[in-house]
Length: 158
Image (cartoon, rainbow, N blue to C red; front, side, top):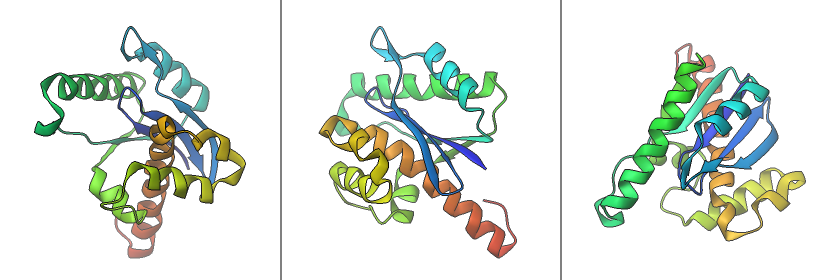
């Protein structure tokens, strides 16, 4: 199954993951300070994922109203593009995917470290602090793959 993982933040990323392999990881396409629907659509149209898995974000009072609005706007753009392109959409809460990946209550740098360990061929994609969104997109996709495997073993749906 081809899974597109999405960290919807302005410094987020998108990743294509299938059968235990990370194929591609990129920064969130941006236009005029917000997520680019056209850029996201181009990536999804190229990747042709079976499912798009998006981190389900919510406002965080400590981040301020402007940051919360921006994140919500980007989240909505991702949902709108995936929906308009008729891709099945899965929303996963940060604490759920981080728990599956062993990253609960750990800093964002831990996501970059884990992604580097899991996919050494892509280590250069995760080397800078600003690449945490890329790492998290890849790990979101991997967490969903884990959910699918677990559900298949349990005879349930994720």
